[in-house]
Length: 584
Image 1 (tube, helix red, strand yellow):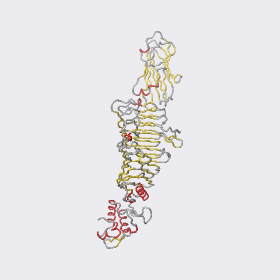
Image 2 (tube, one colour; image 1 turned 30 degrees about the horizontal axis):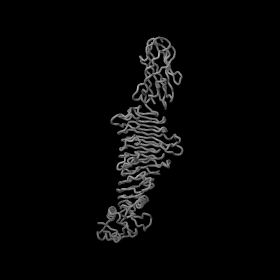
Image 3 (cartoon, helix red, strand yellow; image 1 turned 135 degrees about the vertical axis):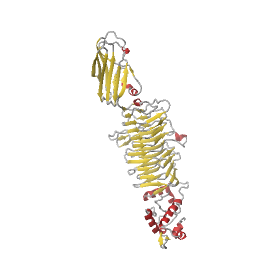
Image 4 (cartoon, one colour; image 1 turned 30 degrees about the vertical axis):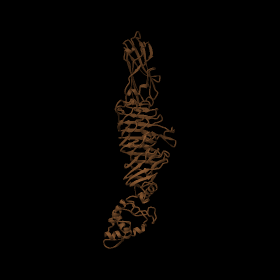
């Protein structure tokens, strides 16, 4: 039996249907409200509605208010009827438990016109009352704002939100403060217009700790979800866990910014930078799946991809610094257990605005990729490209990103300066990538003890009595040795410790001459003799181990002949070897 407004005001519904219990009335009202939300939207005085007479099964006259009070107790509902804005004559009906709809403020909302005012009024009312926001329907708005407060805010219903502004907009939906959940589903559609920088912007959220956006879909906006505010980098947007929305046709789906922004993204189903559905101009944009501007971001599980471009200018992860006070904050990004796939490079760490500032002792930036796997298709740029001013860590461990076809020639990691510390395990990146240490160019690479240099072949100069340098003409190449190919100069015989120094270095020289050669073999450090060993009958070996040699420490080698220098065959006919091992 449907109950109309007329029945409520006259009691006709009760008379026609017999005795109506409080719970039945309440649940019938709920069903009526859910199916025809506009049924009670015209001008009804709250007092008239609540004073409407009904007859109980015992024949007692009861007011609707009395019935609803009993229903509240039985169903543990609170205040199903109350004014939205505080006045007894407020015409709209509030049913907070079932959700407040834009149609509660404009019966024509959702019919294809501009719904911004009604949509915002319903959102404000739901937030003020602690109720639910019912977005069931299709809405056209310029910008929506949710200033949630300290309470948990829930969005219900299945709603499609089309962004209709023509002027430049920072975002389509702005969310500040509070915890919130989308229990139903929401699609934000930007119509592939470039005037919206982002679909959703969350910031100024000191109380925001959990946002479930897993039932949010973002389509056709330049940017998807933006968290934090780089213009106010010191504002705290902390300890947020986000269940990411799905995106389609969004070139930059996630941007996190501000030195005090801490965001954890849990198992994104498909965090994808793509231009699907857009025209040629839309697909000509720069693709960045994740942009991190001085913030602290962790992505745990899920998939991060950039499927539509093979351009060297499009990256899965972009890291840029921001300024907080006088400090330059590069931020921190962790990918843990993530499937990473793309046609463009994995990461770009850059400073496009040429910001300058001091490096805070409390700020150790890093890019950490741990336990990830996936596929990569290009060889037109380094996989990770690091700015010369980046002073943090690049960590790539227990991960396997493979490339089909010909092996890559480009570096796995290119550090354009000597400030970045690189930690890569022996496996390196995976099939198709340069192996182990050889895949990193520049920076300071940390590794366990291994051979880093093998040189051989002494020039064919006749030996003479006295001291002469030992210089090797050739170096063994391949694998880890390629990383350190430049630390030994064959032209002058000098070995230079690279930037960052070593934890330990071991140097060994083996010399084999004819049996009539005797004398001493020497190792010098910065021109001072470090070690010397005698040799006889042409056989000599000397080794030395040095702990923590500093960058630019120079090692040279010499031979002192004390007897038997006469006629000598070509020294290159004999094996003379320099072997250097190190750890860092």
